[in-house]
Amino acid sequence: MKVVSLKGGVVEKRSGGIFTGEVEITYLVDPDTGSKEFRAAIVSFPKGVRNKFHVHDHEQILFVTEGRGIVATEFEEREVGPGDLIFIPAGEKHWHGATEESSFSHLYVMSSHTKTTY
Image (cartoon, helix red, strand yellow):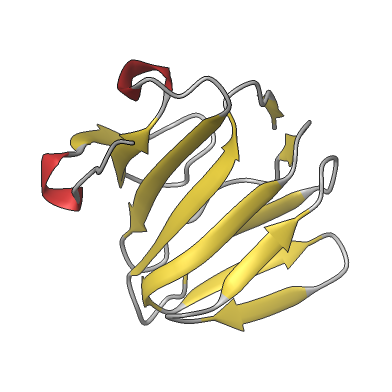
């Protein structure tokens, strides 16, 4: 068993590529922490920042921890907040990020073997 604290997570600022602005990612579970099957991290988006439409070849779970965000597919757009859990099937084209009025953070959990295309 391993207990990982948010305070002990490695924080990385990322921009460009899949993101429309700069986000902070706090890595919690990945191969570096000994996981062979999962990746988990907190992604924090400033107001109005999101990622671009993208697809994962494995399922993804998002759990909203702070703020207000939007999760969208090609057919639907939903506003989400703390305590909401979003399940994204493998192969579903989607994006997620902060509303214009609020920052937004979520925990993601997915396979460590996931490939993402955008």
